[in-house]
Image 1 (cartoon, rainbow, N blue to C red):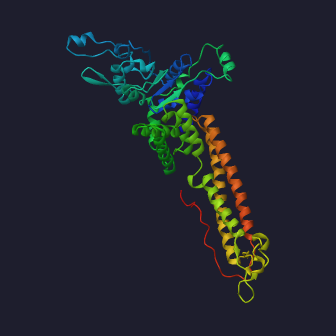
Image 2: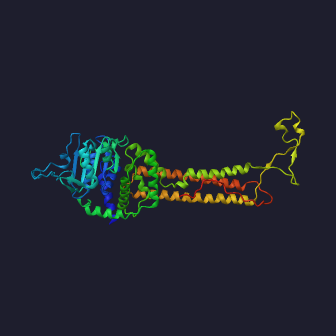
Image 3: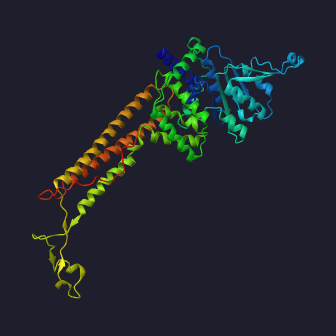
Amino acid sequence: MTINRTARLRAIIDTLEQGLVERRQCVRLCLLAALSGEHTLLIGPPGTAKSELARRLHTVFRDGRYFERLLTRFSVPEELFGPLSIKALEEDRYERHTDGFLPDASIAFIDEVFKANSAILNALLTLLNEREFDNGAGRQACPLISAVGATNEVPEDEVGEAFFDRFLVRLPVAAVSADGFSALLEAGRVRDWTPPAPQSGLDAGDLARLAGEAAAVAVPAEFVAVLAELRRHFATQAIHVSDRRWVKIVWLLRVAAASEGRSTVTLWDLLLLPWLTAPDAPRQAAVADWLAARLGVREAFSPERLTRVVAAFEGQLDAELKANDLDYDEAGRLKFSATELADEIGDAKGGAAAPRMSYSRRRRYGELHIGARVRQVDALLARIAGYAAEIAARRADLAAFAAGSLWLDAGLTARAGVNLAATAAAIEELTERTQLARRGFLDLPRLERDNGVVPEPVAHESLDAA
């Protein structure tokens, strides 16, 4: 059944995308938000297919009712929630006829949503979050699956920010790029769009089954650790993500996994986070950069950290190559020379005639010392080789995930792939440097007889942290 549903969703997505240029991620995230019972905000100028996205979305849900309204600063509650019931007023009750209005809709599109007054926005807060509408003395349950809002700009007032937080998915929608302009003109030749076949639509039973499977999706500790790291990062970037939003984010990612027949979320699901966390395009791009650099690269084995460890061994080798010992004669006494240093120190006062200690000789090392150093380097090489294999496995895993994903943005997966490839190249370079250090330790000048001295381990940053 899961395979069947995944194929159905893929067919639905293909149909929804027809004729829409550079709107792939918008289509998919609008649908994923709806499957998760969440709402989407489209942020961009007029004429960028925002209303078309919502109108197509409602055709996905069998027997779903659609509601659409453009709000202005003069809009009144009757436009959204229905007119007052005259009969109820005669009976001293304040109720509305909601049939055909927002409280009766399955999918709703509210254009210029932030132009509404605070009374409308406050009523919308309850409807969007609780799926309930205060109608007279009681609360009316609403069948709303998902609302799509559209705006040119996001307000900064308190009510506006609270309402903004109700939209889990925030999608900046820009005009079609220069590269897509010819495709846009070509798509304009086809005026009619054929919605998904009714039999392929999703009903309440499909949504309930998906929700049940999503509830069983596992969330690994590694996944939670990256989320926690990102949360700490946001604290330094003035990006506020409420506790409620974090909970909703994980639920949406569980739904994404379940819709693809997976029993667990993966690190690659986190590539959807830019649109779920940051409020605008510049900060979403910054989150995307952070994710592309972080995912698949364990902190303890980051190229920067490994570089410091390799540099510690290179520094130790350099120090041992340059180390000198005082020269002794066969009786164990320091050797003296009257001429070795004369040229360097000058001889204005007869320095050449005075006895002086000879130059110290190059330090030599015993087999135990060299063997210990080589074993330390071999242990580091083994750790690096293990990480190189881990990176290779992550690259293969990302490629397989991207090929089968319903929801992932190809641009983000490509960026993550490029970062992993760069990490693999950096690891290869560090391997070569470590092998050179190993040869350097093997080529250290040796004592004729081992002195039994075993060196202290090279001081470096530990790689034992996860």
